[in-house]
Image (cartoon, rainbow, N blue to C red; front, side, top):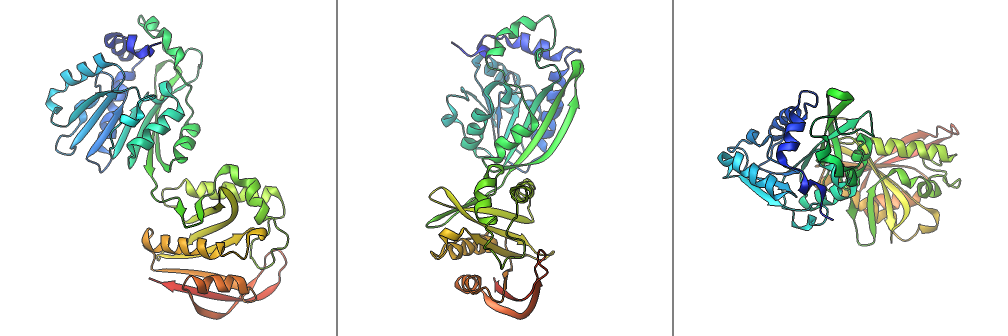
Amino acid sequence: MSNPWNSIKLTDYENHMSLDSVGQLQALNRLMAVQFNAYPVKTAVVLGVAGGNGLEHIDTDKYRTVYGIDINEEYLKEAHKRHKDKEKVLRCLQLDIINEADKLPNAELVIANLLVEYIGYDAFKNAVSKIDPEYVSVVIQINTDTKAWVSDSPYLHSFDRLDEVHHQMEENELAECLDEIGYVKTGTEREDLPNGKAFVRLDFKKQRNRIITTERLVIRPVETGDCAAIHKYAGDPSIDMMLYLPNETMEDTENYVKFAVSEWAKEEPEDREYVVLLDGEIIGGVNLEKIGNDPVYEIGWVIRKDKRGSGYATEAAKALSDYAFEVLKAEQVQSHCDSRNNASEKVMRNIGMTLANDKGTRIYPKTATKSGEYLYILKR
């Protein structure tokens, strides 16, 4: 069966959207003016471009190429006809985004307004992954009445078949979907519409190099579903020379995971918390924490008891050290350890750190026990 959008006349769609009781065509036009001007890019893909509403805001001095993608060929013909003054940069492509994502072009910016509702989160995630942009700007419709999500109008029955493909949208679910492929939300804007509806514009930025790989390990950001695996090492009662471990309860670990995920939601996290995977299994954790205002980062690590002694801590710590210098432009990385912790001291030496201070002290917050502390550093 054909996609229902292929049977909806552009005139019916735009006449409905522009009614005073709907007001969506005008709102989308205003939003696209902002979207086209907000990012330092030269190429863009507009997914679900329809008849080209908003393309008049393309600055041909700024943009080298703008791709307009839609499943409906007649929509694209009209978009091209309306915007002949943009023809040196505008490329209209008829594609079924769900089934032909492999044909999508690469671009620095994706604009997707009222599109995700009709292809779903997974298809949108797949499309963004293929385009691989630096920025994604999405407009979704929020409905207070989920049964009557199309506003009443003389054109209402033109949209009867859209129920076949419509997905109810939620801000958090969309953000989580894009977070899975490395995009962090950078902004949200809401515009209320007639009939109890609203547009929400969500902006995202690609976080490059969030996943680190080594010869044996995958090091990735902590995710919400990692609690049980993390608690296997973070809740180990035999840990006795780490300041904030072991976690006494699963709730402690859950609170840590919430904190870690909230840090990763920032455009520039100050505390990057990772899990370490061996053959797909979480065997430990590492972190990289910014210290003060200078480009100095503290590295920490913990490996599950049954996986110690095989060099995994050294391998993971070395990878984070390299990442700090190469990606975060650190001037110094450092680590602290209990003066009795020979294993951690060995890791520090193995990754090239040298002893900077052997006179430090630490007090364990859970027991009030005092011990000596070493500081090791590695400079650029």
